[in-house]
Image (cartoon, rainbow, N blue to C red; front, side, top):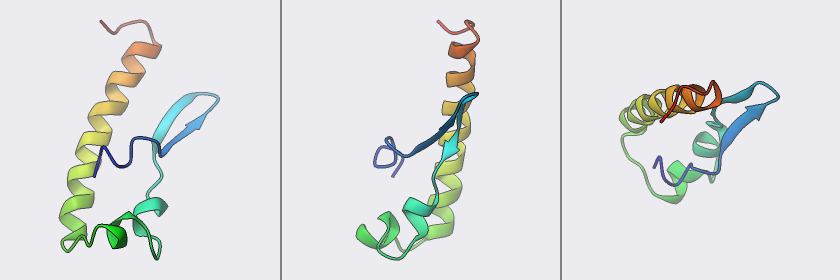
Length: 66
């Protein structure tokens, strides 16, 4: 699901904020489209990946990345 959400980042002038969860949760959203049964578990796992990605994105924007 993380790969399916890769174009759904919320971005402000300050940089990346996080994923747009409404794309998952709305009627007809990705959870519905892909018939996700355990939405809570999927969302929790997605949030772990999101946090790691945000950490890396912030490091890179601060010039501290590889």
